[in-house]
Amino acid sequence: MSRYLYITDVYCPWCYAFGLVFDKVLARYPMPVSVLCGELVSPGYTIDDMVMEMPNIRAFFKRLQDTAGRGVGKAYLDLLEPGKGSMSMDSRAMSVPVAALRRLDPGREREQIEALQKAFYQDGQDVLDPYVQAKACGVDEEALILECSKKEVQEQAEKDRQRAVDILGDFVIYPTLFLERDSGERVLLARSFTDLGTVLTRLEKALEGSSQTDAYRKEASAQDASEGHGHGCGPNGCRL
Image (cartoon, rainbow, N blue to C red; front, side, top):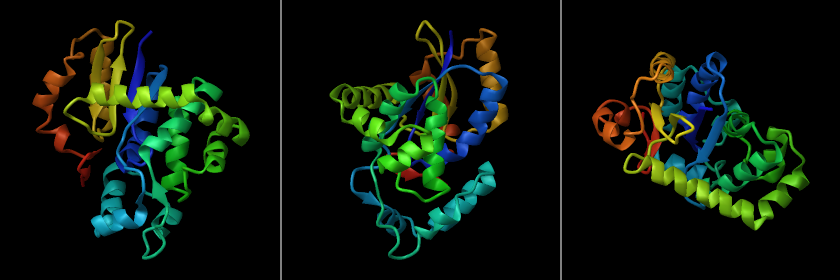
């Protein structure tokens, strides 16, 4: 059975914005979703650090809302005020609870990543906090902490991150969405924030058997002039 392969990052604002598009895609073409976490934010990086690097951050979020129809919450915007952004972010650390949640409540990977992004971008909560993670995703906090402490879960999180790196290759952009077939063949549906019509057109062609396929690295070069420079986040930050 085919599935969606979604490479995202809890701290990626364009991934948060793309969530609305992805939900509409899933409503029309429901299939299982496999989520891989990225490595957008390094350990110890705070919201204050982000504001210092991006003094136009409020204009960025206005652009995000105008483009995607999804804004961030007041609680998050409050964290952008001087002296209020001490909250640390860490993409690698976040991949562990994501892997643990998959084991605790399987089959809800898309819902779980969406819940964590909402907790961060709407409610301004520290999603590195197990209490926040558990409450957002509807699982027991102690069970989640125990699961996160297991070596096999930590190793799986690392494998998932490495798989995401291997798949993205030279084009590390979040969000990235594929249709993945049982054969392992992948069809690129979105690389950076992509509108609903474009995603549906690609998906429908793929489901009809059209071969836009896993020549991802080859076709990524051709598409880089458009999507690759669009609305997404990567090693050099998030593009307006």
